Length: 139
Image 1 (tube, helix red, strand yellow):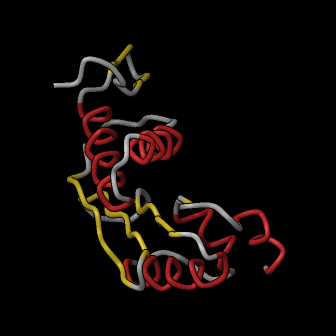
Image 2 (tube, one colour):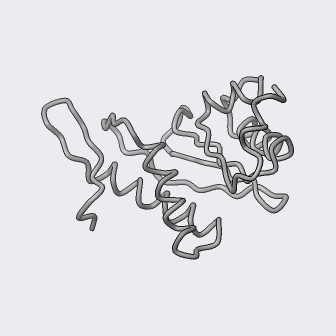
């Protein structure tokens, strides 16, 4: 898997979901402990901070782990039941980049982005069974 990591040299952060992290890590990523170990190992391999997104965890929370500055930090929100959207990962990474661009520290940018995405899901738009993130007019 060493070839994967040459693309991340110089990156500030990489944000794989659990499925993507499994491909990069080469081992299953199905639990919180595996997410944390994966984030640590990927950080060691590529030098960037690593945020493994736990949207596929089987529980009532949406938990993500950031490995940065030699430790893990968890960011967690309640899962919004019954909402099925696409594009949350792209929105999350763009919101992190926006926070960094505004001068936030990395953990602050991740926290702010996590809250933004949670509100975008919770305040989603619905057309029948089609759900769309609410990127605007969040309360």
